[in-house]
Amino acid sequence: MTERIVVVGAALLDGDRLLAARRSAPPELAGRWELPGGKVEPGECPEGALVRELREELGVEAEVVERVPGSWPLRAPYELRVWTARLRPGSAGPEPLQDHDELRWLTPAEIWTVPWLEQDVPAVRQILARLGTGPRA
Image (cartoon, rainbow, N blue to C red):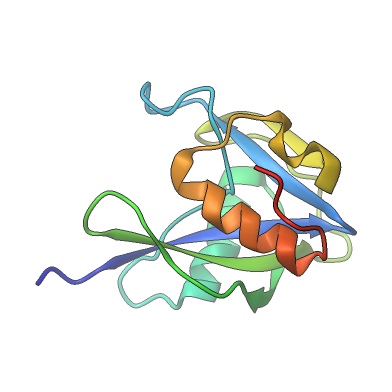
């Protein structure tokens, strides 16, 4: 059995708004929306990887708050795990620096107005449930 490689995703929150990032690469994912994040590198803890990925992809300093229950299979051998996070005081605002061409802060009512990557949909539903706004898609 192949060992799973963890991909961390950030439910970056500002009040009840969730940050969504539109992929610019690779071509098969371009134009679809996701939770920002990336692979955990060898020797790295998932929370540390999330902070690093948010710095690299969005240019922000973030703090991890808590793990969202569950994990979601991506293409083998990857597995998505999501944590809620918030910007640290004094952090710059997020910018699409790497692999993304647009960012949007979505309210619960706006969550399903963007075409999410299929593998992120269950995690987004779980985040909405944690925010106290049930899933609608």
